[in-house]
Length: 387
Image (cartoon, rainbow, N blue to C red; front, side, top):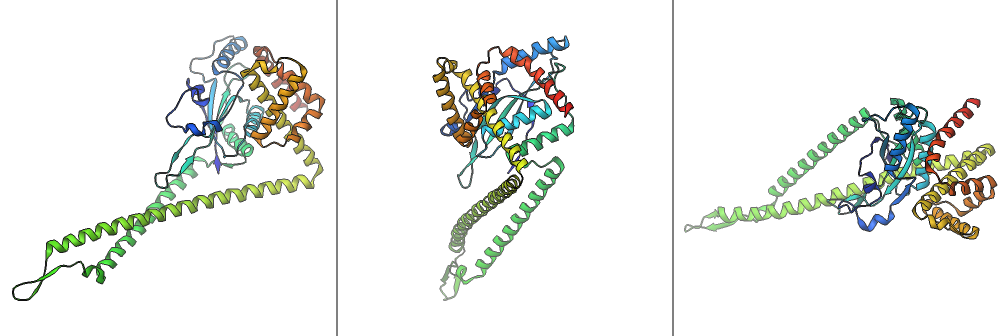
């Protein structure tokens, strides 16, 4: 299964659509409960901070034609988790300075197949990003190879095949159309041959109506014979059409199953190779373990922040109450992201991780946090230069 990512200017009604604040006629309400959401802050609040920071940093107002907030629709799998998307967000920030502050996973959009009447889901995620360069205050400037890198990062983080690039994709589409037309011509030939075969068979001779005249000669009754032929052709066409529909449906199902089977085999092969590499090398095992636990911690922290934004009162009160609430959220994150609970136990064994989680829960002034991102970015760059 292929994925791709393409950022465009965020629309004014983005939040209403992404977080289902309105009722839309093209969604299945019975599936909306399967959607997942995460938000660091409202779009309007982030835009205000971007404008203020641009004025403070550059001494000028943000240009009217600037696109400081952008949104991407990313194709995902049914089992893609919020942890996967947080990992994608982290890589986009580290490598391209793109900071995701809203994520919405939609599993209630799709369509019913016209022929089979089967529901075809359109699994996708909306990623809303802050496109501001924290060093200049202006919007980020990317080149073509950066956009190619976005596709690579997305494919890697989501464990999906990279989307096909332009010219190759168009060529494949044309070849597919040609192949489809050839199949239609072949089916038409078979249909014509079938009609000829049945017309020449004795079966159609029975449709001819003859009557004897006063001299005893047999003559064809044209009106009755044509009526019989018309009825026979109607029946034949209905039967043929039904057979064609059934055949198309079966071929379509087989193609889909083969595609899914191929994707699963490919995914299993990648996982087996990775497992083999990790188990055969102690250093890689330690590195992968650290990466995984960091990802677990990052997902937990972002979930805690989101929950605190929605219900701040949950995190007030005694230490016991706070621990109980964190434990409940750990269980929720574990279930939704297929993370073994033992991973959270590993995270909380580290005193530094515990301190970080508590400090994140005590975040107060979001304006200070926004500006501190610049300091963090500069620190990361200095560390990379030292390495």
